Structures are given as C-alpha cells and as structure tokens.
Image (tube, rainbow, N blue to C red):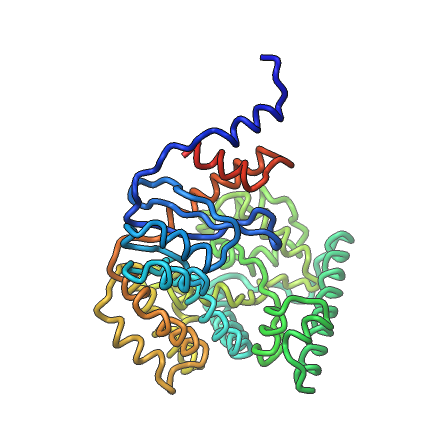
Length: 412
C-alpha cells in the first residue's frame, strides 16, 4: 500500500474504540511513561481481566473524575498510595476499597527489616557463636589439619581481596560521616544530599547501631564437614580436584565433583593455611525471611540461629511474632484475628517499626479488612502493566500517551 508510517499511526489514533461493558470490580495502579518523570494510571476490569482505561498522570482528581463518570463500580482494588485512596473515596464513596495483599506483605517485610537493622551487632554475635558451635561439631571424627602449612594465594584472588577491603574502608568512612552529621542534628534528607547517597542508606546507617558489614555469599554445606580433611590434603600437596573428590566419596561424601571444586576455589582466597570455612554474615534481608518462615521449613542450622537470636533480642522476637501472625493472616485471608492483632501491634509495648507499620494500616482499616476477606487483588493488573510496557518499548520513540493508550485498549 502506498502509504507512509505516519499516516498509519494517525489512522490508528483516530480509530474508534469498542465500547467496554460496565465494570463492577476495578483495579487501579500507576505505570511509568518515563521513569521518574511522567506517570499514568491504568484501570482494569478484574472480572473480565482486561484494561478498560489509561489516564494521564496519577492524581486523585483524575481518578475521582473517572469514577464519577462510572457510578456502577462496586469494588476498587488498589495499592496503599494516598492519591488513589483519596480519589476512590471522593469519586465512589459507595464502593468497597480493597488494599492489595502483595503491597501489604511488602510493607510488612520493610518494617521487619528496619527492626532487624536495629540489632545488627547482636545478629553478628549470634551468627559467630552458632558458626563456632557448628564448626566444633563438624570437626569431630575427622583427621586434624596441619595449622602450620600455608596455602598459596593466586595474585588475581589477592587483588580481589584488596579491592574488597578498599571498598569496605570507603563504605566505613561514609558510615562514620553519616553518623557524625546525624549527631550534629542534621536531618536525613540533608545528609543524603550532602553525601550524594540515597536517603534509605542514610536511614539504615543511623538505625544500625554499628557499622553494617555486607553479607557474604553462602555456599553449600554438604562439603563443609570435610573442610579439615581437605585442608590437610591440600597442604600436603594434593591439589587435583578429581583425587580429592574420590577420597571424599570414600569418606561418605554424597555431593558432586563441582561442589568440591567450588570449595577449593573459595579456599584459594584465604591468606592462612588452615582454610577453614569463614563465618558467613547474615544480611538483614535473609534474617527477615528466616524470621517469617515457619520452623518446619527451616534448615537445622537456621533454626538454631533464629532461636538464639530471639533469645538474645526480645524486642526483635516480639516484632517477628507480630510479623508472622500478620503474614499468615494475609496469606490465608483470615480476617477474624485482625482486630486483636491491630490492638497488639499499636500498643506502646510493640516494637517501634511494627507499631509505625500498624498505625499506617489502622488509618486504612476498611481496605485492609476487605483485603483479608475478599478475593480481589492487583495481581493481574501487574501483568497488564507489563504488557503495556512491552507495547511501549516496541514503539521506540513514538510512544506518546495518546498512541499508547489507543494501542493498549485496542489490543485488549
């Protein structure tokens, strides 16, 4: 057809859209036309599983106006953003607002992580104690390692260790500067601006109580019980992985050849000849997940770590107990324990981070209660937004809002 691409795009924009049937259950969420600058709002019919409108911006006024033009809406699923809550209350006061359950769990995890950051020093002490105890148990019955022999470290590994130490020193200096500015009474936003770092990093440094070390990568435990034997054989000059693997199999090792190879490669970064397994620091994120999981789902060493940590930090145990109850309520959609949990979480004795999280939920009590009893959520809306992003990227520089809205609604 002798026609230009611009003509086709104009025809697409002028094409009439099929009239969508009235939506009774609507999901609303924002999407980025240009991240950090321009945003829009997507509305989705959750019953028919299709987008029904794209609005420019993400303001309460635009959402409220659309609801007033569609008075048949009975249920509105949304995240915990204030603009959408306000727009729903103004535009459709008769509708039931439902807080998205994924966002509830995400906010809970963030609150628990802040509580964990307040006990960084205790977490390190407990992890060291548990590790030392496990090392003693694993070393029983194995031949002793020759502590006097050293392992040669390749130059590349030594350079990597030097770079890692340099980064740690630079991060420590940044931490000390943040604490110094905080002690001078300077606000977190101003500290972030002066230091040119994110405000969440400033908040985490201030709440940690001591310098937060970075967590190291955790390796498989199956070969760890043979560390002393491998250290002795390695110091004796046996550096062929195949031979070491065959010897371990005779001792009862059930892992693979590659596990042994990874273990030896890790030891080569050690400066000492004993090459015993270094204590693995626990990141605050991993500690959060350990505290949220049921005891039956934890590894034996993780169970011991959690029990020791809760015994050492009663305040953190209280926060974890409240978090686990709320986690179970949301996952299993149990609304009956909600009033009692809210009363316990907002009491003065509750940990500060969980109390702040609960106070935010109390301000949105009706939507949270609906989330614990109704099946609606924004899960499918996230998929529709991903689909919208695919269309936007396929259009390259022609992804104007008008054209993108037309393509998205026509494709739906």
